Amino acid sequence: MAKKRVAIFGIKYFPSKGGTSRVVENLLWELRDHFDFTIYCYEHESASTHIPGVKTIQFPEIPVKGVGVFLYYWRCCMHLLLKGKHDLVHAQKTDAAFFLPILGLKFKLVATSHALPYLNEKWSGIGRLYFRMAERFFVRSKAVLTAVSKPQVEYYWNKYRREVSYIPNGILPVEKNEPQLADKILSEHKISSDYILFAARRLIPLKGCHTLLKAMKRIDFKGTLVVAADTGQLPAYTGKLKSLAEGMDVKFIGYISDRGSLNTLIRGASFFVFPSELEGMSMMLLETGSLGTPMICSDIPQNLAVMSAEEVLYFKSKNVVDLAGKLQWAFHHPDEMKDLARKARQNIEQKYLVSRVAKQYVDLYDNLVPQTQAKKSWA
Image (cartoon, rainbow, N blue to C red; front, side, top):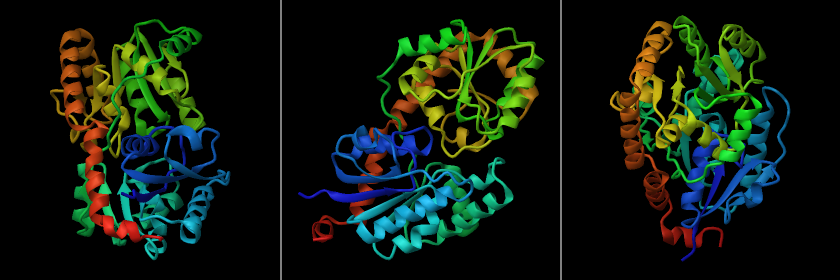
């Protein structure tokens, strides 16, 4: 029986650098035996062999701030129209939604929303306008729409009366650890085995590291905080954080791209603090929970939709005083924190392993493209 051919459009990094690209990568690992996948991505020396059986169409990154990504999407779109032989196209991220009307001329479409990017303070006014316009293309398209969080599904219905299916992110089972690489990182930065961890792909205000530093200063924190995130995204913000960190033992170690090393760092932390002010459905939250590390998290709706107060210790988002109080409680109640972590891990293994999530996409693809049609496609 011929496999249905699916193109993944809207992803830049393959291998993944986290976020949406990791969500897609996990799905590809799980579904590669069911479908014939082709992913459009930036050029990378490992892309073509990264996941056996997954084909790649690679284009160079265009280093033009503001329009480079749009031009990259345009090039992918033109290649799909002129040369693509697929049964359907799955568009990831709403910022690629401008091209849905064009792609819909030739392909059946699935489109997934991972976040509401115009709420991110890092974007300029023009950038936010672009994302708002893209959102309208998303909700008005003929694509079958999905979103990774329940609050997003509710948002699209309340604002646009557009039905969007909820399909959460899925994570791979935790198997790989790289203790030697992690030990090297700890040694290079002179980090002891007792530390609190903050980790993100990018060190930007939306991730809330400033709230964490202010809370730690408020309680006169004497331990070590490890900040694992790319400090080059917003240099002015990084400078602000380093000023806030003066007088405390805070190690800015940069973004840790190797998943095994990051897993080991997370497992070795006393607590993982997740003060993010806005998310779609955080892969970091799911992956940390699956590792059994106790978490202190902001009470944003996107987090509350994933785990309850019986699984993580929540604080009021952006509230320095409340976070300071929750940190002190966590330090004085390590056994209770471990119990929360145990329940979080059970919840994630029951609901958010990619093996469970992927079946929803199998059903969606199969309903959209019946097998008889797939056999005839591009004959």
